[in-house]
Amino acid sequence: MSISSSLNAGVAGLAANSSRLASISDNIANASTAGYKRVVTSFESMVISQSGGTYAAGGVSVSNSRMIDERSSLISTSNATDLAVSGKGFLPVASLAEVEAGEAPNMLLTTTGSFRTNDEGYLTTKSGLVLLGWPANADETFPTVARDTDDPLQPIKFDTSQLSAAPTTAVSLGVNLPSDSAVTGSPGTAEENTIQYFDNLGGQQDLDIVYTPTGLADNEWTMELTDGATGTVIGEYTLTFDDSATGKGTLMSVATTTGGAYDATSGTIIVTTDSGPIEIEIGVMTQLSGAFSAATIEKDGYEAASFAGVEVDEGGYVHILYENGSNRIVYQIPLADMPNPNGMKSLDSQTFMPSSDSGAYYLWDAGSGPTGTVAGYRQEESGTDVATELTSMIQTQRAYSSNAKVIQTVDEMLQETTNIKR
Image (cartoon, rainbow, N blue to C red; front, side):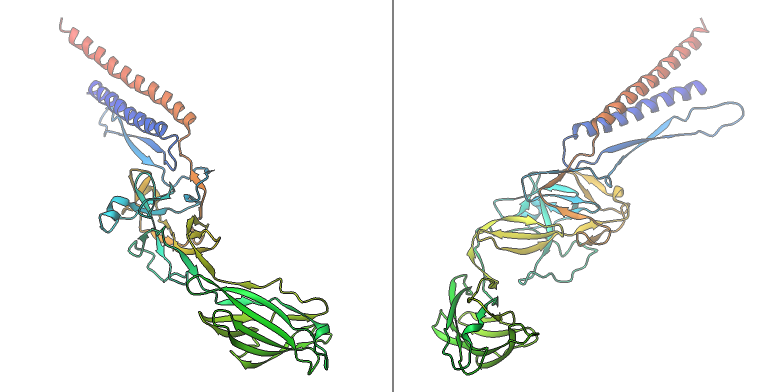
């Protein structure tokens, strides 16, 4: 029986080392595959119960495990939507074929991918994976969603032919008025400046502002605002500045003649243009000695512009870029985490599917909880170390030869036993 068990053990050794060689071959073949997770082969002895002084060889069993939780170095690329996870976590993706067929796609997970916008506007890889994310509201905020399910996730898609525009809703008037002009009994000189604002259709309109010293009191001016789109006065105010040692030429009070009332807390007024209300911050205005200056005027909104590209920031927020330099947040990519990543089921194209062995997943905001951040212009290198794999290959070859020698020896011993009868 011992000789037979030796033969069985040798056969088991051949099978085990063949399995290890298969994993080594896979690892070496994917040495240049971005995001590839190496396979590790483990051997375990098998012991047959013993009785008396006899011993039977139990042989060896083998198991292969993919090291999904291991992370490799990130390399730089020239594509903004080459994405990788810096730290823990997985990017949610789905099969583009399922999406195009109108099916509810199954969420798969990966740690890196080279995504580009295809002819239908989907952000996909060459292997047919589409990136998933939560769509943003019109104001670039995100609704509260369940984090333990992939139901709220949607394939990320853009209408690359659509123009985008945003009306101006806020202006900050960083204006300085010359203190020498606002003197009691002196006519003074009016100052003018024109601000361009964007209307609801992305067109440019003028907002004309005239500042005139009243001559009725020191440090007192009238401010008249005219909407260039209609030619009508939409606001008139009397401004009084503080010339005390503590005031230092800041705005002290505002009296409203027409237009929205002055909010002293926020330092703003609201005027209504042909395109709607605009909140104008005038609390930052000053009256100091020197020339009139309107060099620090700021505003929001942008003119109509065409699609220019896509970028993803560290928080996983997807920005559409436009030709005029503006951008808009349209999706958020979460990062999935689970108790045992190595328990996930491995699929093609470096993707993985959560399973009962991996535990329940949770979708985190990138950079929060246990997860890392999303890195654009990056791809994760393969987890294969070729030198290590070649060394393991030599060891495997020697072990395979040794097991083959065991079988050869058992064969010779059995032949000797047969020869006893002769």
